[in-house]
Image 1 (spheres, one colour):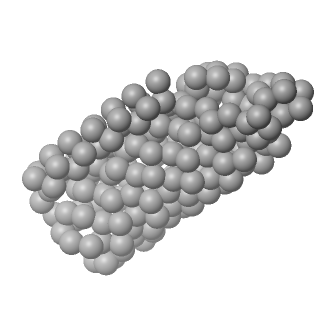
Image 2 (cartoon, one colour):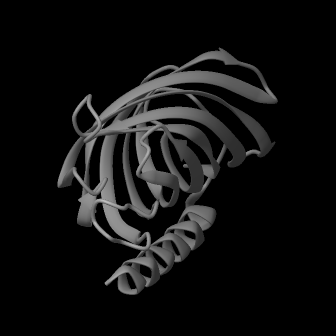
Length: 187
């Protein structure tokens, strides 16, 4: 199932990038601007049962006011769980899909770059319990800071540092610390 999800996300992102490249017009953080960004991320984790998290997917969004955007992010997750003596497991790679709504404010906007902060809520749906003593469906919260470097009128490169929490605030939850990189197309 994880391979099917990866192929589906790859095909969707490829089509989205091709379509966005044809529709893109100009760099803008103005109200009414639509954006699309394929992205990948890597995160360390504070839970003793999880070693790392890799993400891949994309986000589509809309600037509801100047410099203020609302985005819908869908990511595939590859979660590396550590060997556990309590479950006799050798460590597993868990697949999952997550969706989040993200509110982002670009507090610095120049001709060549922008700086932003964002918050979001969503969920993660995994094919096994995450962590071993956790759940397959987890509520998520996130906070991030980052920047865009405008490469051409319709295209920018985005880097964001992110904290993302899944599940309970106990040893059954995950605190991910890391970041993601994206290519943003505006149109």
